[in-house]
Length: 195
Image 1 (cartoon, rainbow, N blue to C red):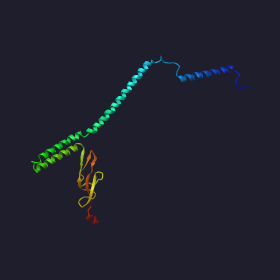
Image 2: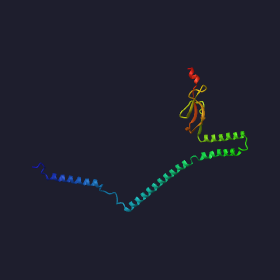
Image 3: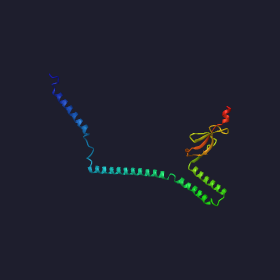
Image 4: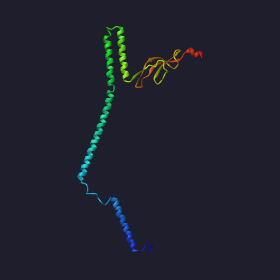
């Protein structure tokens, strides 16, 4: 005996199970045996492919147009950002030109008044655009806002304070454009020796 049963029914049952397993494996590999309808028409499929391709091309073209428009808008914003500011400054230039033209016939007092009016006009325009003046006279020295040109002993002003402003500073919307150039007070010699 070889250890296998001599029963022919057992051989037939094993063949049936093995045939069912093969059928199931083939069905799983090829998909379900039932089709939900007739095969789709190749012409319809091609029409759908063409329609989707056209949609893709239109979307790609629209995206490229948006990119170009955005780039053009940024370029124009850089080019013409100062347009309003420049237009306002032209009024100051006009005032200066009129003052120069009238300078030959005007007296000193009217020239001074004209300069004051022009300066006031310029200051108003700068303030309108967010430019503020930094005049730190008497304030504590701040290296982030002031540039120390020199130090000078002073008995009148607290040491480390701004004694004199050589050149005013300016900020644009809170951001420093130019630091104020200043003389900083140092300890007076007579008070240093008295201690």
